[in-house]
Image (cartoon, rainbow, N blue to C red; front, side):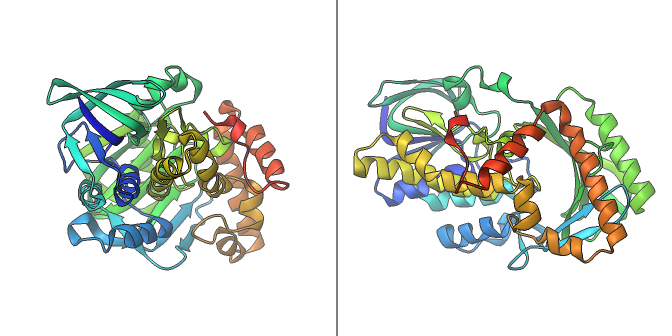
Length: 402
C-alpha cells in the first residue's frame, strides 16, 4: 500500500492546479490517470483570459506544442435565427487555443507531482483520519492511503459516484459531440469562437477553425440522435452562412453535467474527499470550463494546505474558499448581472448597444426563444430566485451544494 499526503484522481488542468498547490506546500502528492500520458481530451481548447492569466502566473509561458492552429482566439461571435451576428473581443486581447493533449500534460509535469498513469480509480473508503483508495494499474489491483483525496476526473466523475451514488440521477445529462471537416469554403472568421442561439439546432451549437479544419459541434439532451443533429446543423451552416464543408474525417463526444452552475447546485465532496473542476458543475456561459477548472483546482489544493495548518476540517475550509468561484461562475448565468454588470470576459451589453433598436429587439427575442428550450428542466424559476437573492447578498447560498 502506498501512503501519501494527497491523492488526486485525474491528470486534468484542475488536477494540475491542485497538485501544484500541494507540492509547493511540501505535501507528497500523487496523481492517478486512467489513460497513458499524454492523453487525448475532448475539448474545443478555447481558453478564457482568466484561465490564460492563471497558466502564465502558475506554470509559465505555454510551449508551442501545447497550442492548436490558429494559436489564439480573439473572442466569441453569437449567431441568432434573425442572422444578426454579435461579435465580442475578449477583455485583454486574444487568448490561447489549447491542444489539450499536450497542454494538460505540460501543466501536470510543471506541477511537480508524481504521476501514475494507466491507473484507473475503482473506489474509496473514508476512515475519518485517512482515505483508502482502490485502483487498477495496468490491470493489476493497487491500493493507496491518503490524508485527502481530490476528485478532478471530469463530468462523469467516478469519485463523485463513490461518495454520492445517486447524484447522476439528480441532474439532467447532455451529450456533446463534434465532427472535424475539411474546409471547402468557410466565411466564418477563424479568429472567433462561434455560438448559435437557435432552439432548432440544439441546446449547444458551435463552430470554429482548428488545424486547417472546421469543427462543427452540437449539444443536446442525452438520448437524442447525434448524426441527425449534426447533419441538420451542417446543412443550416451551408444554407444560412455559406459554409461548405467536406465529409468529416473523425468525430468525438462525451456526456456533460451542464446545469449545476445555472442553479447553484454544485457538488464539492464529503469528509476528506474534495471534488473540483468540471466535475463540480463549474461551466462558463460559452461552455468554457478550463478557467473554472484551474481556479477551483487551485482552491481545492489550498483548502488541503490550510486545513492542515489550522487544524480544521478540510470540507469547512474548501466550502468557505470556493464561494468566490461559485459567485464568479453563477453570476455569468444571472440575468440581472448580465443586464447591469459585466460578469463575462467579453462585453455583451456593449455589443448589443451597437445595434439598432430594431436589431436589439430581434436579438433579444431570439435569445428568449432559445432559453425556452430549457423550460423542461425547470431552471427558469431557480435562476430568477437566485438573481433576486443575489441583490441582497455577496454570494450564493451554500445550502444547495453537495
